[in-house]
Length: 251
Picture 1: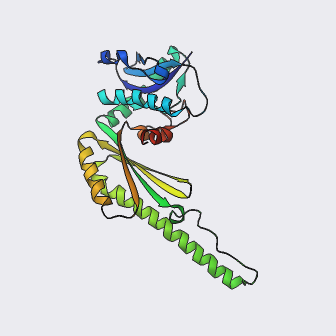
Picture 2: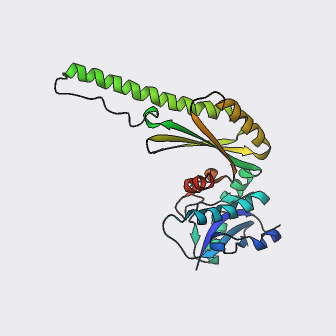
Picture 3: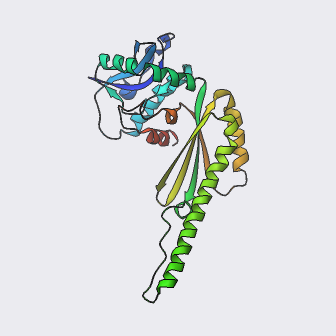
């Protein structure tokens, strides 16, 4: 039987409250301590592909419960390990990396800002200029130049939108990450910020100031466990579904 890994916490102290904690498929969350670290996991069969939303929410609730009580490195969904010795080996191999990451994440949460923009305002997939049979070479080049200028302009607009938020939150965030995705003709610009717990209220105030009177659609999410500030290497044992997890939790 494999073990699904929810997250890594520091040491083995203060785990008494975890006795009734359950995770995916209502399986109890177990704790394996080694090398000054502790892994939170459930014994489960390995599943391939994206799980139902209900399972993602159960996974998220287990991580959130850990996060509410202590600093946690939230693992990417789908991190399975084959047996307790493999868990102990992971803690030994990653002892220094996980220790440093726990120190960086201590007392901090993840806040998110999602901005929806029309795809033709994203700087991507700007339609090519129409060309008919009567269009000569010079006219075609003129159209192409205008097309590229439009692409450059909308790309600058998108970057300016991102920069506006990043700069506004610079004083209350330790780190930030940016992702973009296009769905149904709408580009979503996702900004993630690592924020000290005491700065969450100020973060919300700044967001309110930024969005007052704006025409773009921006949504504030969080506070979350810091999913987007765990490196790919830290969660390399499973395929990342963290964006799906955030989407499910935003419903």
